[in-house]
Length: 475
Image (cartoon, rainbow, N blue to C red; front, side):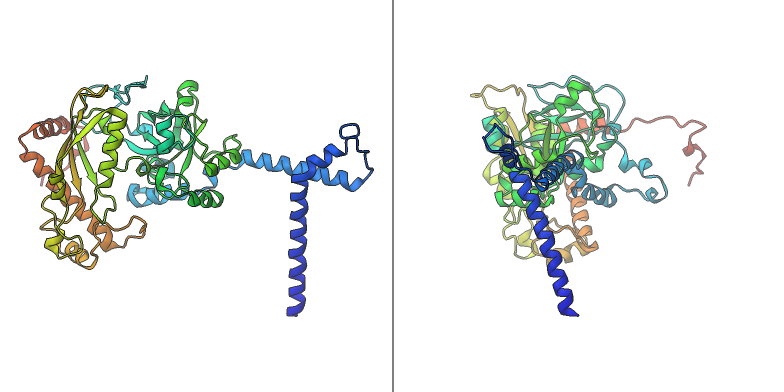
C-alpha cells in the first residue's frame, strides 16, 4: 500500500512539474516561436501543427490572466499591515463598549480627518518650501494636534540627499498627509480608509523591505518576495491635492502591482511615483524632532524611549544631523550635560543604573554662517527613559530581574502583565518628573511651559438645565 501511494505521489509531482515547465516554456519562448512561425518575417515556413497553436493560445491566455491578477491583487490588501493595524487598535484604541457596537461606530475606526481639535480653520506651518494651501496654521485653541510621523522610502530618488539617505519625512495628521519630499494633500482625500489605527500601524512598520540604511539588502529581497513587510504603498499626496479625488489604502486599485514589486526589490521607488512606499517613522527620525522643529514650536518635549542598551543617544544625534543639513540648525547641548542622563553602570546595582537626571534642555539655533529660513530658537526638553527613585515595588522587582530594562529590544512584541505595567508606570513617573522640572524652571523653557499650560486649560462653562451633570446628586 505504501509503495502504491508513493508511486501515485511521484506521478502527481511529476505531472505538476511537467505542467509548470511547459507553462514557463511558453511564457519565455512563445514570442520567439510565434515570430518564427510567421512566414516572411524570418523566412521560416509555417508548420501546420495544431498542438503548437494550442500551446501558443494557452501561453497567451496565461499571460493575460497574470496581467489581470497583477492589476486586481493589491499588495496592501494581501499584506500583513491590515492585521498589524487591527492588533494595534485592539491593544491601545479599543473602548470597553466596542464589543457591543458596530465596528464603524467605534472611535478607533473614525477617519483621521475627524480627529481635529476643532472645526475652526487652522493655519499650521508645515514646510517653508511647500506651504500647504488648505488651513494649515492659525491661533492656539487649547487642544494639541496629533501628528503621526512615518517615512517615505526614496532609494531611487533623483535628489542626491534623498538618494543617499533612502528616506524622507512623511506625516499623517487630521489636516494633511505628506511631507516636504512628496508635497502635501488633504487628509479628507483618504476618506474612511485612513484611521488613527492605520496611521499608527504604518508609523510602527519597522519590519519592512526598505528603511534607509537600517534594512540590509538581503532582507529587502526576502521580505518583498514573501510579502511579509509591514510597509504600505500610499497614493502620492501631490496627486491627491491636484485631483481632489477620494483615495484609499486597502482597496484593490487598478495598478500594475508587479511593477511596484520590482521597484521594491531593486530599490527604484522614489518620492515622485504615483504610489509611494511608506514605513516606520524610525527609519528616518525615530524621535519625531524634525517634524516639530520645522514647525518652529517654541518648546518641544522629546521622549526618547527607544531601545538603547548602550545609552549612546544615537537617535538624538541623527535628528540633529538631519536638521543641520536640511535646515541649517545647530543643536546646542554640551557633552557633559549628556553624560548626566547616562547611568554609571547600565548592568550594575539599582543605584548604579539610576542616572543623575532623565531630563536635559537643549536648543536648536540657526547657524549664522548658513542661509536658512529658520528665524528663531527652538527649546527641546529631552527625556531619556531610565530608572527613577521612588518607583513602585513591582517595577523595582521587574527591573532587578531584567537588567536590560527599560531598554529591552523592540523585537519582543509579546508583553506580559508585569512587563506592560513596568513600562507604563515608568512612563507615568517620567511624565510627573518632567512636569515638576518645568514648573520649577525659571528660564525661557519655564515661561513657555507656563504659557502652554494656560492655553491648554479648559475654559469653564455653565451647566445648563439639560446637562447630565446638573442631574447628578452632589456627594
